[in-house]
Image (cartoon, rainbow, N blue to C red; front, side, top):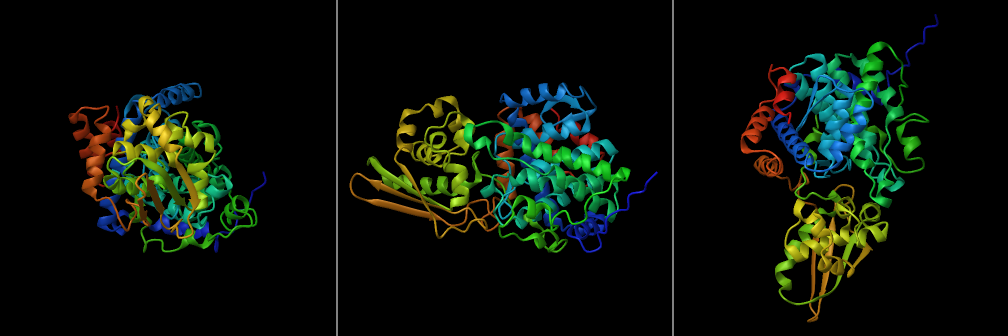
Length: 464
């Protein structure tokens, strides 16, 4: 029998990450980071519950049933029980399905939607406690964020969804940590999952549901890679920086920062830079919604003759192309990624919540007509990808021109939603499908994470 030698990882970025993750304990994580982590998880679980009111979870359950049937892992917000990897997939779909989940701003990555399902599935499968679960989640977020940062905002520009790409690496580390892999094993898990890290943005062309799968696929891939690493599989050491590593394959010829993957581990906590969304829409549009709200009182009863929105061209591709789907959204998923529709609807209604994504809202003739008055230009002063800037200019029939710029979007670490804000959002989202008693139960379970309670008990408390 031929023995395949393990690749040298002594100087690779995956080895740096592996060494850090292997020695990390929850005591190494500052108390404020742990507390914020619990609130990010609370936000994610509330969204998973709220997603159950829509049609896509049922389709996902039916698809997963065809692969392996029932298992013993609880699912967030649903009564189903599935095998570990299927539970991770479905939990990712539920958390991310409404596109209302958190985003690490510089990474342009939904970090919790992959890291939490991976950490939870691994912890339940291994009989771990919530102390291990919380640590694995934090590590998953830290790695996902750094991998996304390394892309320097370029993944979207070439058609990759960084949540799927970066989330796979974070999930592999989260699952590997729960499995007790050593530094070499964690490096190997990253090497293996590199071949599974992909998610295409082509859904933007026709409103397909594939984006909803991305974080669940990343979580499932992370569990798979960790399992193969534990069994003795080998993976490339230079999975990030190598000739055909992540950045040279996915972002060939573009400016990238591979070194960001290993920077500041244990000193700078990227989890604290993760933004909680105040709106159930693409994060690239939040600044525009806030700008529209701030300008709205000045409009009064005066007719709007024109609206100009300035956005960086990279996020502009996501929320303004293709034009036919953005100026006249075909469904609620189109609307979430439509800069013209969001601005028009916010100006008319004075808000943008889940109700503004209903069928009735999408058919609102006044909103659709106002959206046709929106013109989009490039924004040379945008802070993207460090922040998601938005500038709105409104021309009125009386000759006035109203202008407002949101240089740093609300929810950004420079303008964060407080933990109390997160709790309020959780109560609102879970309240759309569950009574107060269930919300109380889930809130207690999530905010109590980090002790010797079995992870399976936490999962049961968050089950539908």
